[in-house]
Image 1 (tube, helix red, strand yellow):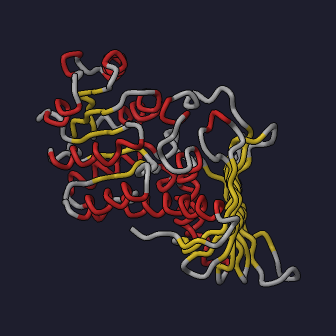
Image 2 (cartoon, rainbow, N blue to C red):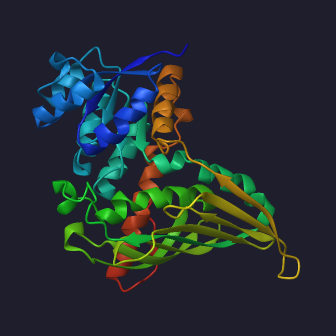
Length: 349
């Protein structure tokens, strides 16, 4: 039987309640919710009831939950501009933590988190759940079948959703983090993209703001150059008018191609085509699959549990360094757009 860790939640808003808590509760042999803190205490009390946390374990201050000796690990969901200071406080109290993406509000803060992570043996997981999805693993398994990888097209686009429950959160309406929704949601897509084709070295992009409620630019069209020499296009945005919500990732090789379809409402499918020409082409396989019902969230927490109980940070999948790269790609795209689409190098931590 695995070691059970007591977990304290910092930031008990919508995503903590509706997504993180159910994922934690599914892992009841590995985690027990024991404490909560929110700047609005009433929200923490409400969360505690759903998590079966005694009300006396709802903390009045961040320092109080950080100092709680009954808390083994922290689940941190705060406005992104507070990620760095909150992680610094967690590490100073010896608390391993999982903290929501994007890694930070700025590249300077993100770079400081990478430095913090390298300075300690305390595990830090950045909650980029797309790194844990089956789709990436399947694509990597099939990749050798298409020969030398040459290029890619990645598209994740959809219509503006007036019912988005996250839309009216103050830190999203007036984002202090670079790119607003482009980094908040875009790092998910970039996590999958870079998992398969590797790090991106430069970006040429155009962005613009379509919706006032986005608070910042909210659509992105770009071309990218990977460190491996692979070239491709990346298109992202959910601020358009009526359109189908599409997710597709096509990887082109000199001996075939992989086409992943993760569009809303459709079965998840990867089509493997092989052959070095039209005359030799064939559909070798069509792989249909399902992601787990927490869409990678439970996997994040299992990863944290493994790192803590084994005292081994090397097992962490979603590291600060990887998360820095995803945010740095967004930063490069925004800089490129300001310069009329000039090619911009992606910064290193």
